[in-house]
Structure formats: structure tokens, C-alpha cells
Image (cartoon, rainbow, N blue to C red; front, side, top):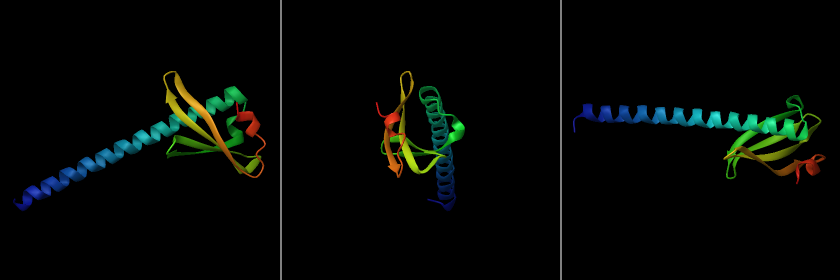
Length: 110
């Protein structure tokens, strides 16, 4: 094959790969923000916890989208929630608490 064809194939593959990676990143970022908003609404409506009293750190793990909630008055403790999509919106599930003073554990367990 002439060199010109190989260059075209490589360029096309590179363009497609970059476009795919960009799409996947935007999709991931959109999903993270959407589920983060769902968790914030859940904490505000079910537990009356204002958004200013905690920080969220979200990741995509084996269990799906998982968020660690760290309260400003308990900086050494993380409360882990899993947020999944369901037919009627989002389903929020409390998973674990890691840290020293876990005073809110009984609040989240059913």
C-alpha cells in the first residue's frame, strides 16, 4: 500500500479515537453531575441537611456511581452513598461510613 493510504488510515483512526474519548468524557461528567444533584436533593429533602454543610467526592466504581459525603463538623469521617438510575428517577443507597466519629450512621441506616 502506498504511504499516503497509511497516513489517511492513521489520521482517520486518530480523529475517531479523539472524538470517542471526548464523547465518553462528556457523558461521564454529565452523569456524575446529574447524580450528584440527585444526592444533594435527597440529603436536603429526607434528612434536612443543607448543601453548605458537606462536600461530595464522586467516583465511578464497581458498584456504579459512588459518592463520599464529608461533613464540615466531621472532617475525619466519610459517608458513602451509591446513586443509581431507576425508572422513577434516581435511587440512593447508603453503603458505609469510614473514619473516627461516625455519629450520623444511625441516621442513614433503614
